[in-house]
Amino acid sequence: MDNWHTSRTGKRAGKRVGFPRFRSKRHRLSCRFSTGSFGLSESDRRHVQLPRIGLVRTHESTRKLARHVERGTARIRSATVSLQRGRWHVSFSVEITKTEPTPATTGGEVGVDLGVKHLAVLSTGESIANPKHLDAAQRELRRWQRQAARRQGPDKRTKQKPSNRWRTTQARIAKLHTAVANARRDGLHKLSTRLVAEFDTVVVEDLHVAGMVRNRRLARAVSDVGMGELRRQLDYTTTWSGRQLVVADRGYPSSKTCNDCGAVTAKLRLSERTFTCDHCGYRTDRDLNAARNLADLTSSPSCGATKNEPAGNPHKTSPAGSGYRHGKTPTQRAGANAA
Ligand SMILES: [Zn+2]
Image 1 (spheres, rainbow, N blue to C red):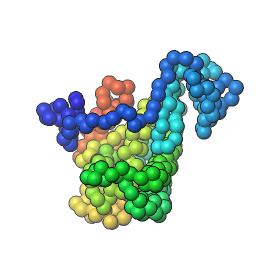
Image 2: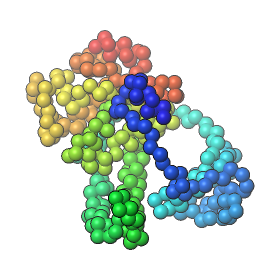
Image 3: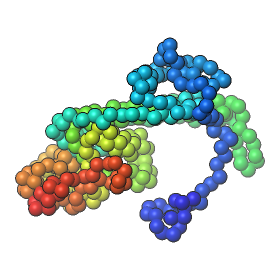
Image 4: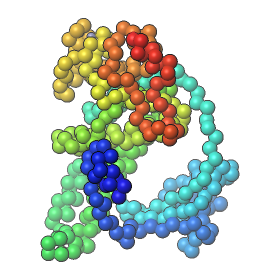
């Protein structure tokens, strides 16, 4: 309601937010326990205890939470059991006393250029391949969608209820989509964890993911990469581990700027995979050039002195005062301005 109201009165930026639609709570099967005996099984790490239900085996190991409980650093406050995409999940609301780890400084910074061709290109020269999970599942997905088309689905006009056979197919489609999403998220978690472990500062572009998804030719590929999700993960992993995330301005021409001389090329088509500088003739891989430019945003002023002032100062677009670290330190900012 608040989003709708602020959008209507013009206080909220971005796309217009409509009036909230009614959503029934009935069909979401979930139940929260806050009293009674519940928690992890004490004998092994494969079972959870639920009130009235008893001991239930879990698919995943409960090791991580169990260790916290055994050490006395976690207190389980409630348990929620829910049915999500055909699987039962249990989630515990936990109070954890976490000792802030003192991050071991690695002294490095890395620019990360996200893309569709490669999942990411690092300024170190490494490129992480795009696993294209959805592409791989596309064949099977098409098969189930064909099957669904042959079966009796719902019809709003005639108030025809869907057949059980149609529902079975829909469950198969949902299961496949879940597998794709899980694989994608897993890969992104591994990448973000690695970046945070290996570098002090991670520099990314402020990508307009919602805008790219609006482009019909790009939408599927962009969604399959999960750039928005990687950004979201980096946001909190950097905070947790005491690292710095620098987000370059939307206007910063990371792919059009020459990493050698700093000149900005007027035009660079998306199909051009190699960057060639108009000014000095420097040639390199397009994405690598962009990643290096991003990494340079944080480098020392002596280095930046030979380069053009970027179109915008890098900044961190996190809500202020929420415990996030902010872009540049004052000394760095002074240096960049002097350049
Ligand atoms: Zn150049």
